[in-house]
Length: 467
Image (cartoon, rainbow, N blue to C red; front, side, top):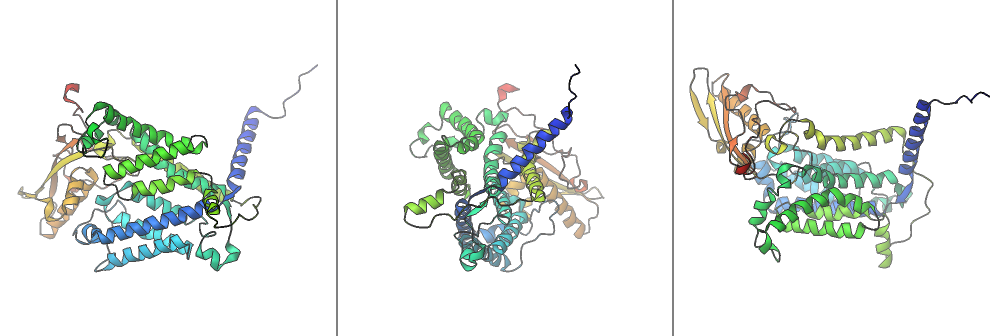
């Protein structure tokens, strides 16, 4: 008797299984969940952004960072972005505060969210010396919120237009928000998997300067405490998201995250980041918890009948997948770049490398004209103290400043000058070494997002006995 002939090849069976799995994921992402968590996040986001705009105005930072400097370190490809003239920057922040209030209230939400994203991205792109990981995170969150229906419940828009009101949202809204909040945690942990952090540097020197910290500060010079902070932070970053996703460990994980952020808020000057992350981490709880909390207070009402599904088109799923992949791959690009990103800065930004390096540097610039005449330039002639400090340890800013010096020299009649930099830097307490090849004419080097060969490799050991 002949054996039956298979109707499908192994390849076809595999493809069918993959198609079935993809369909199951697509179906899951379209299933409705309570929109209360999204309404909560909208209110929290709007309130914290309103507070942030007020902070920058009240502390005089608008003038200090964007009006007073005569030169700005722009991002590659965004040289055309410049601060508003006159009182324009104050007006800009005022409008941003108003937009944050509208987001909080859910008023003209789509327009407000779109304008807030554009306005905040503009602020972010104005000055590289002001790069902050949480500013980058806010740009991403603001972008995502344009596409989330956060105005359909507990919002002025829902009150004004009852036909657009809904107590449900598609599951992909919730998981995209959770994913974006989880990215800084996880990749912040991945970034800590480097030799310096595993040897408790630079956290050891930071803790040693804060022995006045309440209760536990007296132990900040003890090795067990230093390594506890280093490895505790590493493990929290890597594990907090999985623990938040598991219902049994969620309360413990959330409490640990809150303690972590409160400690950081008092140890370091990192602005709204700890408070924002505490509020944002709550999205990992059951999406209906804000409704349940209000119900216990005698407020709110039960959710309307749950719909069967909320459609996500195939093209929408493709765009969503592309965005997720970008957010995963971008923080990992330093793995394919030769060199220590904390030293070269290549692959450091947009990768959640937070509080990983303590870098001291000094930079001296020499201009040489075609006649062989040379003279030095003091960066403080053109830069603020903050810009000068940031620039001295960041090669991409050193290059941009060198280009500026060449342009200034050309304007004074010195054509085709060379600009060289002698930069000495110390990373995480190492002995200083040169960061930039002092023989290279930086004026002739192009600005590029790709790795360059004029940054000298880090060769100084963390501890002298390693040499």
